[in-house]
Picture 1 (tube, protein in one colour):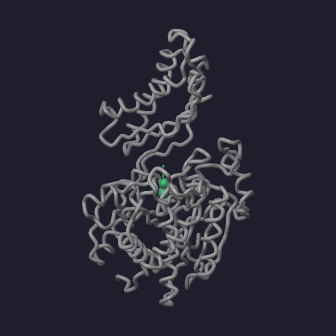
Picture 2 (cartoon, protein in one colour):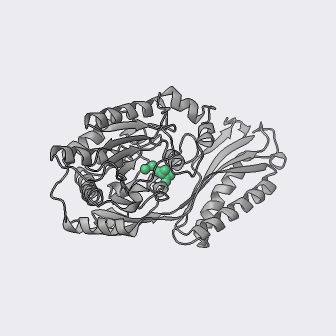
Picture 3 (cartoon, protein in one colour):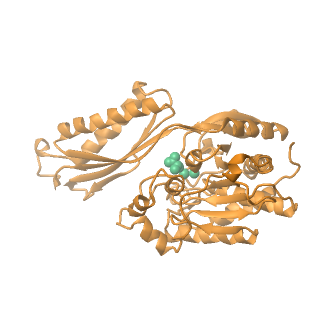
Amino acid sequence: MINKLSIDGDRLYRSLDALGAVGAFDDPRTGLRGVCRLALTAADGAGRLHVVKQLREAGLEVRIDQIGNVFARRAGQDDRLRPVMIGSHIDSVATAGRYDGCLGVLGGLEVVRTLNDARRATLRPLVVAFFTDEEGARFGTDMLGSAVATGRIALEEAYAFQDRHGVSVQGALAAIDFLGEADPRLAAPYAYLECHIEQGPVLRAAGVDIGVVRGVQGICWHEVTIVGRSAHAGTTPMALRADAGVAAARINLALRDMVASGRFGPEFRATMGVILPDPGLVNVVPGQVTATVDLRDPDTALLDAAEAAIIAFYAEAARMEGVTITHRRTARTPYVGFDQGIQDRIDAMADARGLSHAEIVSGAGHDAQELARLCPAGMVFVPGEYDGISHNPRELSTEGQCANGVNVLLDVAIALADEPATHEDFR
Ligand code: HGY
Ligand code: MN
Ligand code: MN
């Protein structure tokens, strides 16, 4: 049975704009207003307070756990039953737009507002959630909060992660007063749903309204430390150099060659996002470089092979440049497939609304891939303009695109939240 309710697209879009103003900055590169709410910074703290206030105003009971995850609960007619959870993240990268993650959290709030307006109860409780540090851009590993909630990362290990300035996750949580008390290990919800922008060109190019996400590709991150010898750029003969900058460049080009080789499949992607020379001065051969490597592949075996290949190349680059190269694996998740039943429901609800839809594998990581360890999980993607660019202030999904996604989210959430008790609810 298809629900007859629809969300208020204008209210949703205004809520995205309002949150987008928190941690906003004027980007000199694009001339656009971007968003910078790096995890657990003061800006993230302000964004959290902004969203928690609205969750409470919607009548939700808010709980904050020990890793700063926030869960806002709408009681069900039978409150003993496991909830349907709708979530995502509101932390951002440093050059973000206003939709990445926020669409899933504010979309969940819009679902609740729509049900409240219609005085529509659901059998099961609903929980709207946002998870700590999904991006991993500050403390180095992605999906941190949802990984702790689902047991992949231990709380004490997560607390100890530090940013470049030696600030720990625990210290940063306390600094923004989101060091909650609730147990961080999440009781399994009945189901988990996430609406998210695609962050790529596929849906928009195909003219498709809704992406039915089959799963999330594998992700592997390294932090690479290259130690050479700083020296005078003018007086040091080339043969006497141990240039950490050239070694980093060799690794970056090796990544590009690995993609071009085709050895790791047609979808393999590799990126050196961080390249920090020390001392980083015009007339000094770089004595040290801190770099990162980001490998992605929907085929977990090929991702393993790619990681082994780049590790082998680190040794080769070290030999060629006379430097030492060490690396630390900071993120590693295999391909994660989503629940077929939820995918089928997304298909059906999109059809019922006359929305076109297509299957897609997510190029980006998401909290849903962690929740999939606990319960049936699924994602609804919406297209984006400008080739779906993301992690860039030019990121843009229109009001209509966002409303389509959150309407399908509403329909699937209601259908799941009205499903009767099973023996699992009383285990
Ligand atoms: O890196 C990612 O895939 C996500 O944006 N955290
Ligand atoms: Mn995201
Ligand atoms: Mn992101």
